[in-house]
Length: 340
Ligand code: TXA
Ligand code: MG
Image (cartoon, rainbow, N blue to C red; front, side, top):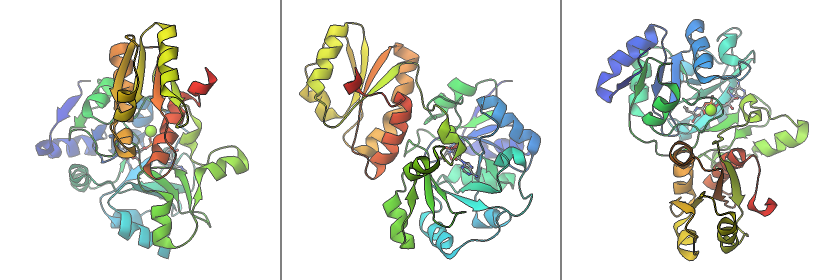
């Protein structure tokens, strides 16, 4: 199959592919998604195949209106209504209880809930409206690889496996949406993202659990996707913690003598004497630029450099830096410079 790149003026063609049960990758503000008609079980099955995704990992349902969600969910609590009003369209995915048999098991992984996402990207909202159905929308990467933040990343992973990619340039946020479970007594964040616990608590005026508590209580993360090794480049990534000395990292690289990648803030890059075998890439100056660049830089290191070791800047996990550190920890398999 030839995968075609489509622009915003070719959405009719993209919508036709969706209606025919084919796969179309679409832009969002977080990362690119892999779309299929969520009401067409055969089409949804192809998504798992194209990604190489374990079939017990449920898919996000991507919508272009609140009405589209109401068709499938039992009801919205007052808190859910407030969150929808504040954050949709945007980077907050919410899990709701479904009406019986509202969506196929292929979408839900057999759960009686589903995760709904209303992305902040006009092309994709238009595409969904033209197709007239919600789209399943996992990240459009090969399972286990960093999520795609450009159409070219999608092409790299899925060329020949999907019908088309709608190209809307690089995404703005760079890490996937916050996943908030609204189907339980106490709302719980299953995956941190650009919408933070504090942002959510400020709207609903009550405590929100976070994903780390879930893991602590029963050892298995509640979002099935969180148990797999994720976002991993071929190289081993080591986190350089905020209290680590970057000059010691440079000394380690010098002694190692083979080429090594470094991803760090500008001020760190400028403050250290890097040995010649270091390839330094900037993460900008703050958590926002770091989150935006993380996946693209991990891919860049993999595709062009084939290093065995990458050092990446660790941040104090507050605000958006919590999402950044969550993804970085998975990329690194929890390995830190300190352990070397
Ligand atoms: O930003 C995003 O959310 C991107 C863009 C493309 O929209 N999508 C995305 O989808 O990241 P995916 O499938 O890669 O990640 C969805 C996560 C997985 O960890 C999955 O296990 C979890 O949400 N999830 C989906 N449905 C769930 C459910 N009913 N209960 C618990 N977790 C669920
Ligand atoms: Mg994913």
